[in-house]
Image (cartoon, rainbow, N blue to C red; front, side):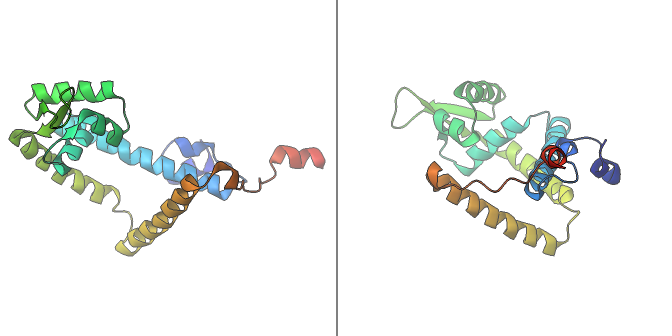
Length: 188
């Protein structure tokens, strides 16, 4: 266990790789990843315990709730960033439970559109309200001003990342690498 884990009493996670002289950007990246992983773990556990469902099923229902006319299977796959096979499997389960319905796609006879059934809409509303409460609880360690500050800082980061994605690879400058302990010790 490293110093960060010992101080925080959380046990090892992705951030446990950090050492004192690692670059600040690396420390921040691993801290963000560790927090995201912990939050996602709690959400997965609670969805399973309280609703006997999974995060991918919840995410698929959430997408359909936002699109009452339904979404094509291909569109669901792209939005959820999973394979078509995964979407088919989840859709099969939800359809068997009466939560979603496959209907012929209006413009492509070879594909289907998926939409929530009334029962699916009711079930998702219950899950979404509970999910929101969990998120409020999990991020409750920050005061409202802190949440607003982090939200703004992450917006700046997101904009920066969007600019990098849009830039040709040749235009992206590599940051100067901090000298490692090994190379410092070798030159001493």
